[in-house]
Image 1 (cartoon, one colour):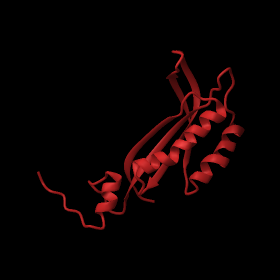
Image 2 (image 1 turned 180 degrees about the horizontal axis):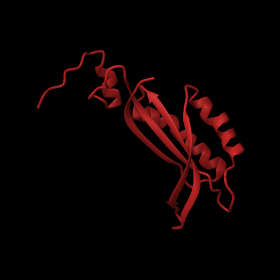
Image 3 (image 1 turned 180 degrees about the vertical axis):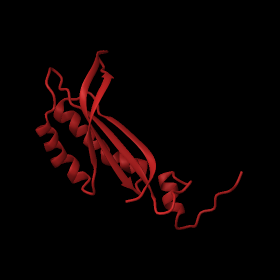
Image 4 (image 1 turned 45 degrees about the horizontal axis):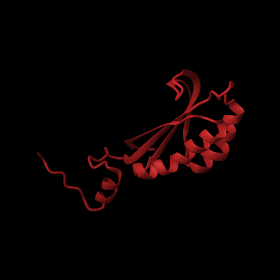
Length: 135
């Protein structure tokens, strides 16, 4: 099996991010975080666009002023009560260059908790994965 030899200046970031295979030229290791926010409200109704926009403006944007992507989505999941719920959702995509998975989780977890409390949600789906990015 071939040995991978890395210059010392690359090794700390490589080990920190768990991306020791390296990224192609011009790209940087990153953690990509995705959050899925269901918009159905217990007892009826949905989180409206104005409410979502307020959450985005006062909670998400201050935490991630470098940029983000929001997409409309449709979701389906089984709640704790066993009922299958189909609902409109918002998908938030955050690209965090040179950020470890642990640090990314520490930054996005408060968004999920804020949304859950604010809109009485049972959960917010969070995904994370390593990537190589270039801007």
